[in-house]
Amino acid sequence: MIVAGIDVGGKNVHIVIKKDGQILGKATGPAGIKKAQAVEQLYDEVLKKAGLTRKDVERVVAAGSSAKRVAFANGFIPDAVADARGVNKLVPSARTVIDVGAEECRAVKVSHEGKVLDFVVNEKCAAGTGAFVEAMSRALEISVDEMSKIALQSTQTVSTNAQCAVFGESEVVSLIHQRTPKPDIARAMMNAIAGRVASVTRILGLEKDVVMVGGMARNAAFVDSLKKSIDMNVVVPEGPDYVGALGAAEAALAEAMTEEVKTKAPGEKTVAPGKD
Image (cartoon, rainbow, N blue to C red; front, side, top):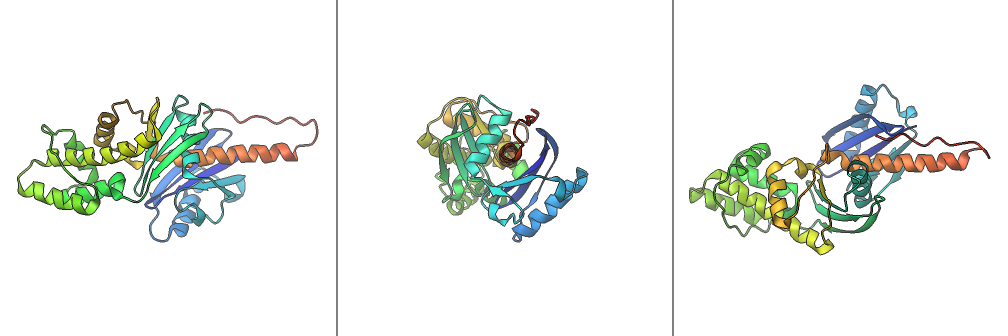
């Protein structure tokens, strides 16, 4: 049984295709302005690489802020559900999931079965998202990757009051004029966004194991700042930015299995999907 999960965010599209529990292919690409077109193109590309056609895929489930742009999807699930399902597959011991993407940050409380018990979202302020880091890197005139690297080289703590991207950029410029070393400025900005994310997660309540996913989970300096902000260890699974798509694929598989059971003849057995 072949299924697909598609996570369409404000900045990127992630796709995971699975067969009987095994990943056949995955891909990511920019969502751009024409998100529906970007999804169609990326989907066809990943299918081609996997040696498949659209007819081979039994069910497609989409998630993400622009999930409805996936015209060929058979179903849609909330982002929190996608996170919970995906993380439960990768880190079964997870009880708190922190997802920081380009547009929003989200904290999800997860049961041992991978079900959503509660969640909280910060989508009104860029200070808790990847967009904030991108804005700060532009102000520092370096790439996001370079900003993460030099932040880990910081030797002194710099206090900031950055609560939004606009004020944050002004503060960065001011610190540069004061000849503050860039590594220290970079670390201060990472601490600022980590503090914002921590305040959101505390509303939900933190329970071990804490797992971080989303694009910002690839930013080592930010993850380090977050660990210190919440005073807890943070687990980052392999392919953290694909977790939403993986969760959508898991949902597609469950739905396909349920549909198969409904259509089975009396007495006919159903074979459970394999595990990763």
